[in-house]
Image (cartoon, rainbow, N blue to C red; front, side, top):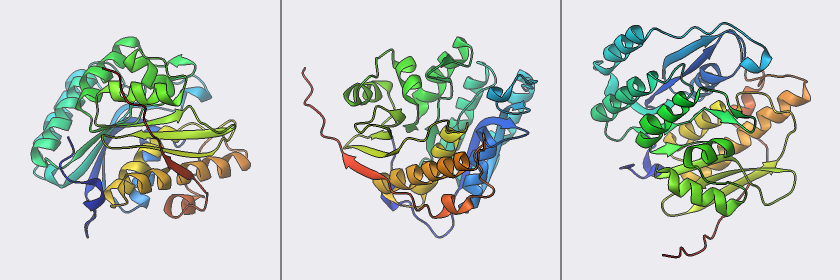
Length: 297
């Protein structure tokens, strides 16, 4: 439950954001993309890598370095006892290196919320895409049971929403129903079914409204858009833009970053050279309020 309205979270000094996800040596996926975006927007960031990879697996096989269970648990112990934990305004959780990390990360989320009851947990359940699961099924299930269950906001893509709920997500109405079944108070569905042709839709399903933000579809988008989008949305909420404003700004930045990167022939998001798209995107994103059909008891 989010105690403070999202539109009234703005303050003179931005809170820290704790990011728990993967780390790559090369590229802009996982923590590299999320941390860059958040710090560029002025937020101090705590970063807990769950795995170290040379690059995104889509670029080829590479060595996976996963912290030993004992070491990861000890790190969580240290962080959970920190006297600075109350300065964290949001926790973003993403890709996990193995199933056992889910309970440890959940413990860290609980510690942050104990130190600051107003902090949000934004769960990006990074488990797969249209090609299927790209983590072992026990890891996906652990994310659902330990992290999605704790989330104030979840940001699954269309495939992830369908897998986590066991529901079909073929239409916008399907996406809304599945989002309501997922559990968190707010669910932001990336790659939700769009009403317009050749468009991408980000669908925010909240307790009082459903808002859709649509923009043009860019073929062959680079990896890492979900990580960046979740970070942008969280940052814009913390800045006090409100749900619709945060959704439109996050969608515009992500779309513009993707379009500019593809135009330059890059297989990675060009965050370093396209920082203007993070700070003040020029892309047009349309938004609309979705009228839900009355539920039949």
